[in-house]
Image (cartoon, rainbow over all chains, first blue to last red; front, side, top):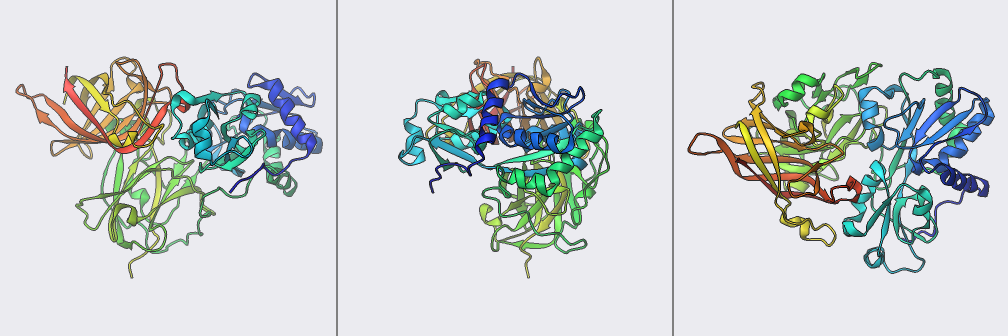
Length: 406
Length: 142
């Protein structure tokens, strides 16, 4: 399918975005209003096109001035509110620098290939390009997965939104796409999540801004720029009934490196049993109901019944905060052998009504007809000694059978 | 497993099956130091790069003469002995063999996961990356 451009915003909003990009270029803030204590919002350039008009509308409506600081949100560097994708906010939310309880998703921005009008198919067009532009930073790392067929020598990363918009060939979030044909990129959409910095000195203003984003007026404004669902996502997942059958019933084995045992705060494997029940209790690193897997740790559970290879996914893992990857192995015996089902799956699909996100696994991918025992392994594999939180590694809340053996 | 080791990592053959994903076959090596890493709930071995230890950290479970665990770098990656910058988030698995002096080595380890390689000044989004199950590694005494 070929798309010739995103939904058209009003001309004034487009002009404001361009002005914002040209003036800031990641170097400084733009103020709406003249108060000495504005609410400061920090976000990458990909989020500017909707934040600029939204903040202007908020300031007009509330009388509270705002400042948009166009830089990666981590570190927040004086911001009161951060907006960013999971990969940008993960460590802020996990470590409590940003308040998990205040966070919510504004919407999604799909990635697009930008190629000249009437180009051949995307693969051929990109193969013929001398340079393919990609945003810099963590956002760019999300997109890089879509340029596997383009050699590193031909990938040009840029922090300049103007340069990205002028590129003849680019892989960019739709918000940074310039002229040319915009084609589906097959890369997971960026999710725009807003969260308040826990220690903000402008608590009231920050809360008011987040309330504006949640309001019908704010939602309507944001919907001009953001999609309601992630491309390729099967949905937010059905609500999970407390006490429902088919959840992990007992722990068979587990292991965390000694380093992770020493530094993490959530090492109890029993926390992965039963339905998802993770909660954030407020403050820094204050959770209940999760097991953090540290660097490459794992927990093996007995599901209490067998999952079968049925329609769609067969096993769901609930993982708290962001989309830390998870690897899953499965077996019909507690002693194995365990077969790899999914390697380092992003575990960030949203779960309706739950703190935890989730990721789904299909036994078919491992060639298994059924399994009762699953080994859930950390897929983030971040150096333990470099971690700064009590929740390093994937944070497992629950494991659920989706296709239960009759 | 204790003392000074040379870690060699080789991207898997499957990484060269698509244009653009080709990672030079390596090997890419690093000077490492191994030490005991706890006993509960299973014995472990921690293996760190010399210098900034957290820039390349391996945390292994060590049971049945087999090492299994995570190879991790931070967002900055780590310089190889050969001068490239490498990022890795992979699970390694390998049998430990004993040299004549009793020191353990891994001469045929497998790695599953993510490896990216770039120039010394590259950021990760500029690197060539490959997710595969057929990477390999060795850990030999130096």
